Length: 241
Image (cartoon, rainbow, N blue to C red):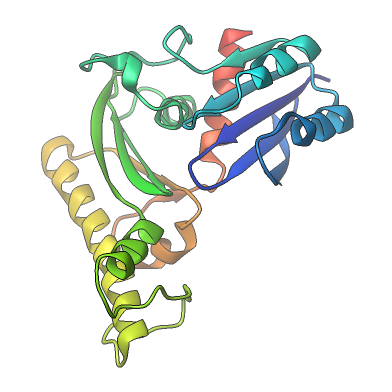
């Protein structure tokens, strides 16, 4: 059985997913994006192929290292996809958004899909039922909002995130929590409603590290999957190997 390692180098975390055949076997959070760290993973799993999605300026030697050990693919402008990109400057589309779109089409073909990722930034990615990525929008993520309020004011603290807070904050911390989390939930709900007014029937797929804070606060039925990007990377890997 083939073994595929899908690497995702994000702005905040470095992660890898191991697939045995088409089955997701394990998710690994990497200490860093160095070759010694990757080597430990490669030696353990002995992949038959690998793929990398990176939104950072990673060490280019990583690409050669992975390619020397098994067939390797770096997501980029020449990647073969299961959707088209009729947008301005498609070469500037982030690798993470490409993976999300690929997952949406792979899991729900011939349907309208809105894939939302909650990470350093929130990305909204709309793919039509003709498998066209039409674009979407980007806004600040949760930690970015907390940090900006702390850094751009004299007295607001950088708080520790918790799920236990009321709608009506009673001190500075709970006011910040309520403002950011409920504010983001209202934003997501509002954007979904705007898409509903235009397209009426579509799937909403939600993923990202902050997923658990928002699923209970969203009105529309959604498909929550923390591993959506990795499922997209695996689909892309199969297409490009």
